[in-house]
Every structure is written in C-alpha cells, then in structure tokens.
Length: 503
Image (cartoon, rainbow, N blue to C red):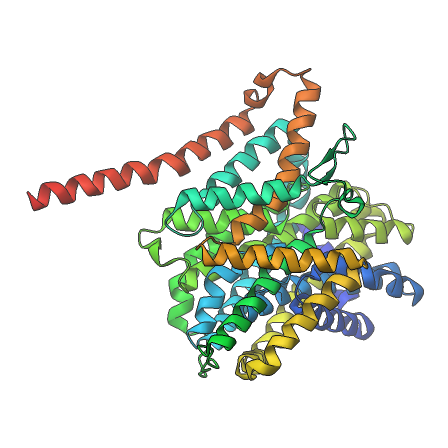
C-alpha cells in the first residue's frame, strides 16, 4: 500500500505541472466535443489526434495524458447526441438513447444531461480507484480468459440483450439477428469466402460500424423528423430548467454502484469494451429492479446504468494495457501504439522503470474525471437549448453532421449511399416498433462471438465440449440461466398469486 501511495503522489506531481494540467483540461474539452459528434467516438478521435500529439514533440507522459483526456472526454461526450438527438456518439452510448432521449422529449434534457454527467463521473472515478488498488492483480486474472470463456461471456451478453427493450422478446432477438447478419457482410478472414456481398466490390471489406450507427440512428431520425414535418405533427420541444436533484441521485445510487462494478470488470477483459459493459449493466438492472417496466420510457435508472458502466469500462480497459501491455479496447490499442511510438514498453516493469508515465496517467484520470464534471455541468443548459432550435434548421444540421461523420472517417462515397439505405431500414424498423439498440449490439457482439468460437474450436480440433470445461465459462452459463429463467419463474408465481387472490 505504501508503494501505491508513493506512486500516486509521484503521479500527481507530474499531472499537476501547469503544462500537463493544461493538456488534461484541453484533452477533456476536445474529447467532449469529439464524443458529441455522432459516430466519431473515442477511437477515431484519439486516432486522428495521435499524429498531432507526436508531431508537437511532447514528452511521452504529456502526450499520453493528452490522449487519455481525449479518450475519457469522448466517453463523456457520447451521451450528449444520444440524449438530445437520439443519435449515439459511439457504440458505448447506444444504451443511453433508450431512456435519455425519452427524458429529453419530455422536456427534461437538463435533468438527463446532468444526471448522466454525475453517473459518468462516479463510474469513471470508481474504475480509477479500483485500477489504483488492484490493477495488476485483476489484469493477471483477466488474461487467463480463454476463447471458450469469451464465448460464454458473449452468450451471457446476448441473454441480457433479450431483456433489454420492449415487451416483445421476439422482436428484440430478431433485431439482434439483423445486427449479426450485417456484421457478417464481407470477406471471411478465415476462409476467404465472400458473404452477402452480391458481387458489389465495395461490400468486400464489410460495413463500417460508423456507417451502421449513423445510418440506423442518424438517418432514421432524420427521415422521421422529415415525415413529422411534412405531416404537420412536428412541434418544437419545450425545454425546462430541470437539473439533477439529490432525490434523483439517491434513487440511482445502487444502480450506479452495480453498473460501475459490472463496467469495470467487463472493461478489463481484452476485446469487450464499453458497448458490452453498458448492455450488460442495463440488462442486469432491468432484471433486478422490481418496477423495471418503466425502462425505455425515460427512467433515470435506465440512463444512469449504461453511463456509469461505459465510463467504468473505459477505466477498466486501461488496466491490461498498463500492467500487461495488452489493450483492453480499440482505443487503448491506439494508446498502446502511442506508447510504442515514444519507445515506452507497457507492462509490469513500466511501473518501476517509467513511473512518471504509469502513475502520471493514473493521476491524470482522477483530475480528468473531476474536470469533466465541472466542464459538463455548467454547459448542460447550453446543450439542452439545442433542442429549441427550429426543426427547419435542426434537420439539415443532423444531415450535415451525419454525412461529415461518415465521409471524414470512411472516405468512400459508396458508404454515403449505404448510410441512406440503412437509414431507410432503421425508419422501417421504427415503424414496426423494433428497437434499434439490439441491431447495433448484435453488430458489435457478432464478430467477437464468431472469432472466439472459431478460436475455441480450433484449439479443441472441433470438440464442442471445450465450451463447458472451465470454471469461468460454467459460471457465465449459470448466470445466463439465472437471468433468463428467474424472471420467468417469478412472473408465473406472481400471476398464480393474483389468480388465487381473485378467486
């Protein structure tokens, strides 16, 4: 413990240098703006700004502090467009749309934005505290996960998914299946077989996540707005001066705590990320809480759960990168590349050989989380007023943001057509009362499930029993059974009691 305290003090002595403090604040602010742009997300934001940080000739610890600030700033910012425009900033913010946007449409945009900022702060800080105290130990456990364990985790995530939204589980699973099919488009990396490409060369590389998320959410929302405008049913939303209250925080305290724990532990598993963490946290809360039928209609607990989880996952993903040199997410893979560019090798020895970098980064995350709270809360009113913009201006603004977001990252005109097609698909699904979140999560989880299933079967030479051999995988299958069976059993018992009492 003395070594931890001493290291943390050294880290704060690095972070609180005026120049590094400026980089933390600048990175957090820039990250918030990047995260707020639909579809850009932390991974693209860090990737775009990495060459700039390198070309500035910054010391390694300063460059990493700046990039890390952009990373968790973007995780914060992703909630803004999710809540206000129903367009998630990145995959981790998809679940935020389910209850955040209904709150905004109810005139509680300020309350939703401030509550999500506080939940993000608590989730992010909770993860940094756990990383400080138990990081190396937890990372050692995380790397023992085998491909078959990941398959079990994905099955558990899909079981949570089935209970995510709506009362019709069939539609939810069908939506997830559409997401899985979209994720399988392109050349199969293992066999070289073209899947669902229909002879179109631009589909051989598959569909980029950015195109799917902006198409299904951004373009579908745009078509919906135009439809409402043409039919004369579109009204400018009323915005009150609502703000998160102590009662709100008291009501969601256990939700935030549970979701932070789930987010952190899923975050340290390499390759999972904030999207899995937020989906599992949301699904778990919906299963646990007795009055969860309000989820999806603007329930503050349904907003706090994914926000706490995805920010905790962002902190958790740092653990294997710093302690073992294994990236826990796509963004930390880029941060790992940044370290290597500066001739710094991450791993257990980094805390002894380059403590100013390892502990400086951890200390900067404490400062950054606090800075993000103070940056975001005063701007809640400003963000909320975005909804008061007349729709004749707001509609083209969403279109411009969507097309710029796609073209600036993908750079292929074909993907603009694909964005429009997916927008029409998303609009049709909305008309049929399908939730779009399972489509996105099926798209994100599909490749993870397929890759790990193939690796597990390759190791066992095709023997499927490998999927049930380890304690971790059996534990996940057990949780899957619990999460599916228990609510069904409790529901039958409740109906039986009601029938008995009526008789």
